[in-house]
Length: 126
Length: 367
Image (cartoon, rainbow over all chains, first blue to last red; front, side, top):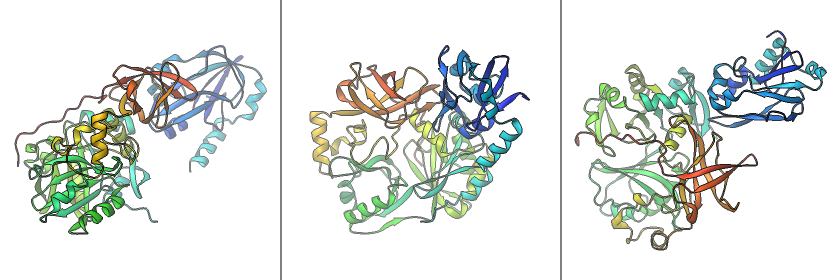
C-alpha cells in the first residue's frame, strides 16, 4: 500500500488513475470492535472532503465514516453492507467502502503516508 | 469516590479484559475475544460472568418478616418453598419499580439479589420497612454466573450434584471446604447457574471453571445475550416510572397478591382492570440498522407512538433487535412501525419476545 494515504479520521485511500478506493483502517476496526452494520453513500452522489460518507456500527456504538477527499461516488461495496463482519476481517483489502472519482487530486497532499499514520494512530490511542 | 474492584479484578486483568466503570465498580466490558465471539461462546458452550457488583442482601427470618417483605414486593412469599427463587420488584407508590430482583428463601434467611446501581437505595428502602432488623448486605461474597449449554457439565466437574438443581431453585454446596450457595438461574436465556461464594475463593473457583472448559465473558456480551432473551435491564427497560404491567411483566406479580395490599398495589390493580396506555414490546427493524436507546417510534401516519429502551445487533438471531414502550393501540404483534435513526425512518415490526428461544433446563430433582 505504498501509494495509500491516510486521514486523521482513520480512513485510507488508494489512487488508481482518477479513481480512489476508500476504506477504514485496521486500527479503526480494532477500536470499534465487532462491526455489525454499515451504511454507504449512494452511487452517483457527490461527497465533500471531511464530510460524512457513511456509518459503521459496532455492538457498542455508531461511528460516522468520513471521506478523506472530495469526488463523485462511482462504486460502492455492497458485500460489506450484506456482511459487515468482513470489515473486521479485511479492512484494508476486500472490505473497501466506496470508490470516488476525485474532484481535486491535490487534496491527497493533506493526508498522511503509512509511516505518519502509524505514528499518529499510536499516539492518539495511547 | 474510589472505583471499587471485585475479588476477580486481577483475574480479569490476566485475561486481557477491557474495563469500564459501571455502578462504581471497574468491570470487564469485554476480553480479547470480542463481543460477538463471547456472545456465541455463551450460546454454544459456556461463559462465566463476574456479577459480584450486584447486591447480595440477606435477611434473617423473624415473626413478621414475610408480611413486611410482602408489603414492598408483589410476590407470594408465603408459598415460596425453601431453596426456591422468584423474580420480583421493589415497588414504588406510583406502581413504578425501584429495582427488579431475585428473592430466594434459604433455610434461615431470605437472599435478595439486587442491581448494582440500585443496591444502596434499595437497602435504605428495605431498612426503613423492616425497622433495620437483621439485614446484611454481604460484601465478603462474590457472585459468579455460568451460562450456556455446557455449563451444567462443567460446573458439575467442580461442584458435584449441582446439575440436579431445578430452574429457579438453589441449594447449599461446598468448594474447598467453603460453603457456597448455587441457584439455577441467569440472565442470558441459556441454562445456567449463579454461585454466591466467599471472595477469598472466587479466583480459584473461576480458574477451575476455565480449566474445565468455560470462558470469561464481559458485560457487553451479557447485554446482547439478555436482550435476545427479551430480559429487561433496570434503568433502561424498566424504572421508577414504568409499572410491571406496562413492562409486560405482569406474570411476575403473584396471582394471589393482585388483590392484596403492597406498595403501589392500587395503581397496579387499576392498570390490570382498565388497561395501560403504553406497553413494552419487542421491535425488529427490517434492515440491519441499530435502533439504540431513546430512538423515537412512529406509526404509519408519522405520529410519535413510543421510544426504544434497548437496542443492539443480536448475533444469534443475526438481526437488529430492540425493545421499547409503544402506545397500547400499536402494541399488537406484526404492527408496522417506523424508527427514526439519524434522521431517516426505518421500517420495523412489533414482535413477540424473546427474540431468541430460551433453553432453560428443568433439572432432575430437588437437592
